[in-house]
Every structure is written in structure tokens, then in C-alpha cells.
Length: 632
Image (cartoon, rainbow, N blue to C red):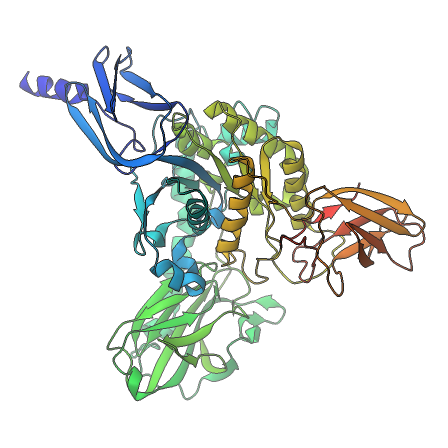
């Protein structure tokens, strides 16, 4: 009986959702809900600033109060009282932004330190708070809460885990408005749009709904998770057992190992990783001796090993300084003090190829760095194969990518949290399905606005340039999806587009320049959320007119103050055969005249229509790039 009484008293205690916690940011100038759970019919009071509100929990123990419109400020404390008393501290009132999408939204500040480290290391701001929603999914019903998480303000240390896009956006917004900023990062790398849409909003997509229904069997999900990891674990076990570099008497990472019979290769020449025309999978070892000057000896340094396909472990003088399990992150490793010595030092890389073409990606940094001194690691390396393997089997089903799962677990629980708007960076995982993306995103935007009962700004980051440079491709899934993103911004009210066609990297799907992305999102926010009379867009295609063998292209008023260039690049024109050819393009006032002397009857024009239209250079005088487009 005593145990039962204790259990009942514990159940009766008032409880708060994860986001209603120390450091939270509440939306200013809007109705703000504070909610939680208590015993059924229990009286609950909430005191904030000088106001106190009381309510009674319903039969399920759920309760909520709505605070009157709050002015920006803080930090404040809030007291919630029932049979127990809770105090929430360090509360700010300002503007809250939901930051969502896939890996380019998730990419943390720690990944971009090589480009922005000096700025980040000098910046702290107690008026910017951030929380990352942990990965979780559910295919049954919308959830009431998210997994444990914590609000943190900006310091050089805490910023390492911030979304880089969200960080630079918040910094820009605070500098422009002086209003506290709250960032709720609910993003998942690799996620397609349909994972973020409710079951109700997916009704027009029967194939996706059936995919969700398959995943509603908990037994199926559990069994596939168990079996899905088995091939990879077995592959890794055999790899390690057969890797000569790990199993010979002297490991190949050791300075004592004799590598005189190893072959040599240039680091960026990937021919070592091929078996004829096909990729060679398995493990490959690379060793290079570098000369370290006396003033480096014993000091901590940084080692940059660019980007590696697929996985790696890196050693300096036999000491492991870093390891990465997949190809996308930059390899920026710390070399501990005491590792380097005067004279010859050994750098060793154990590279594991799981199923792609193994390589050290070109045009990335490969060097040792100490203060302002650098030692290049490019050039000749010794190498030897540790073990050859078949391509690794697929990793089973990635359930977080299945329809509705992320909405139910990572968006719906935020429904009571009032916000200023949404930052959305996603699309890479839908590039093969651009034809349905407009309808998916229309459903998503309507879905989320219905959840928060507000037509808040929805700010989209257009896909950046990526892959091999080309000013023109007849077919480009990335160009098609960018065009859909442009149509979303043009047709759905209160939707903005941050064009990033000029800040990508051909060899990295996660380009480092997230600062420019944040700044361009901030321009859209200032225009749509704050009503500033500013130019937030580069030239936006509006209409075209055929005049003889030329096409006159016009742009939206306010974006069409075109910047002069010596040679305008990126335009293509098609005749009646539908084949596009690069065109001559000239700026005349606020229009562009497009033609190709081989095409006498032009039908259609494209601009920057390629995965990576490097060199496309139509901007307005505000310095903002034109969105890729196709005339209709």
C-alpha cells in the first residue's frame, strides 16, 4: 500500500514537455501556450512575468494555458505549480524559427570551422538559444512529446553542435533586429519530403501511404532492423579478420613497419582503387613520411585529410588521430601534443571502400597545420591493399526516411510551440522525383501551417550547385527540382526562396559556405516576416517574348536591376526539335536577349540548367544570383 501511494503521488506531479524547459524561447507578440501533464482534474497554475493563470487538467491529465502577447525580452523565470512546483529559468521572449529538412540543415558548425573558425571562436550571444530534436520516428500516431533535449545559448563551445545554416541565420537576424532568437532544429540527414508530412496530408499519394502502412507493423520494423544491420556487421567482421594491415606481426600503422616493397601513387590519382573498369572494395593502406621542423615538435597540430570515399582511420606516428565511418564529413583531425617530433614523421591512412569508387576527393585540403604554418600532404604516398572484398550489402530499410514517421515524432509534438516561421533546406533526396515534389511540398506547407494555425513564412533553400561543372545539360534532376522550388516560392503565399546556385562545391554535397545561405535566408525573413522594403531575391523569371530568332526574357519587377558583366553565361535556347544549345545572351536594360545563330525558330530558353552550372553569372545589382529557370 505504501508503494502504491508513492507511485500515485509521483504520477500526480505536474510534468512539462521537453521544450518547455530552462533556456526556452517564447514567441513574442503572439498567443503562447504552456502545457503539460498532471493528475486528472488537478489544478495547475502558471506564473510568468506579473501574470498568473490557473487551469484544471482534463480526464487524461492534460492541461494548457495561453499567455497573453509577450514583448521581447528576458531572461525570465516561470513557475508552474500543482501538487509540486517547477521553475523554468533563463527564458527569453523573441522570435522562434523551426529549422527542418535533411543533412544540409543538420550540418553542424563543427564541419565549417575550417572556413569560419575565427569568427565562431570569437562569438557568444546569450540572446540566441538553440535546441536539436533527437532523431526518432513513429508510424502510428502523432506523438505528444520529443525525446530528451536541451536548450543552449551561443558560445564558441556550444556552437559546435548548432546547425550551421541556423547559426548564421540567427546571428544575422539578431544583428539586424536586436530581438532574441530561438532555433528549434528538427532535421534528419537524407530524409525525403514525405517523411515530414502527416498521414492526413498524404491522402493524395496512395503509394506513399501504403509504404507507411507497411511500416506500421512493429514486428516488421524490429525484425528488419535486426536483419538490416547483420550484412554490414558480417562484412566488417570478415574485413577486419582478413586485413593484413591489422593482423601482421607489426601493424601497418606502426612506424616500425617496413614498407619498402609498397607501390607508390599520387594521393589524388584514384587508379589504385579500380579493378579494370570497376571499383575495388575492401581496405587500402597509405603511408607518407613528412619532415617536421624543430618549432613544431611536441605541439598540438591540425591534420586535414580532405574528404575520403568511403571510411577511414588516420594515424600519426602510430597514434590514431581520427576516424570517420562514411564519405561526406570533412576529415579535420586534431594531432595531440607530444605526437609530432623533429625530423621524419609518419602519416598513415587506413581507407575502407564499401561500395563506391574509393578515392581521396580532389580540390580538398590535405595538410598539417600549426598556427600559420602548413605542410602539404599531397603528392606521392606509398600504398598497399590490406584485403579485397565484395561490395558491402545494403543496410536494410532506413525507417526514418519512410512516410509520416518524422512528422509524427519530430514535428507534431511541436504543435503548441508558437513560432515566427520555418527554415527548410531539403530536396536532395527527392531529385529523382521532381515531378511530384511540387505537390508534396504544397501538402507539407499547408500541413504545417494547419498544425500551428498560422500562415507563417516558409523559407526554402534552393539546392546548391553540385557535381561535375557544366553550363548545360539536356536532362538534370537537380535543375528540375530547383525549378519546382522556384514555382513553390512564386505560387504559395508567404513563401520565400534563398537561391544558392553559386555557393556549392562540385565535390561536396554539403558545401561549407553556410554563412551565405544563412544571410540569404535572413533577407527573405526580413522581407516576409518583418515587412522590410528590401530586395531579397536575385532576378526572378517572369515572362519571355520571341522576336525573330531572338528571345527577350523579362524578370519580376524589383529583382530586375541587372548587374552588368563582360560576358553573360548560362543561357541556352531550343528550337522546334527541343534540343538545347548554349546561347549568346546580352543584357539590355532590365531584360536579357537570348539567341543562337544555328536556331532560327527559338521555342524555349533555359538558364543555369545543370546539376552544377558553374560560371552562370546573372545577378542583380544587389549581388543576388538569378534562380535557374525554364521558359514555358
